[in-house]
Image (cartoon, rainbow, N blue to C red; front, side, top):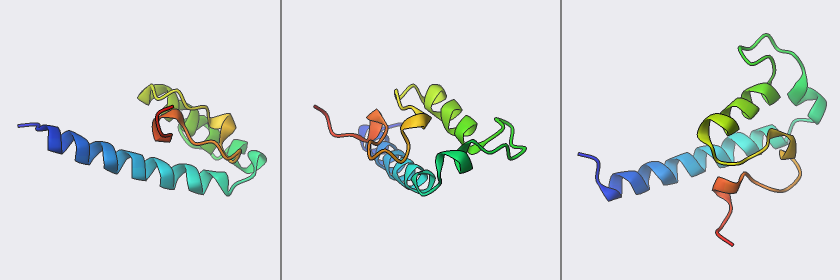
Length: 77
C-alpha cells in the first residue's frame, strides 16, 4: 500500500536526485551540454529538456548553471 510516508520518502529522494543531476549539469558549459552525443535525445541538453517536460515540474534546461534550480526544487514562495 502506498502511504503518505512512502510518498514523502519518494519525493525527498526525487528532490535529492534532481539536485545532484542539475548540479552536475551546471558544471558543464552550455556548449558541452548541447553537444551532440548520439544519445536518444541527441545531447545532455535535449535529455534534460525531455525530463523537465516529462515530469511537468516547469524547469527549463536552458537555465542550468544560472544559479536557479528547477521550480520543483525551490522552496515555496
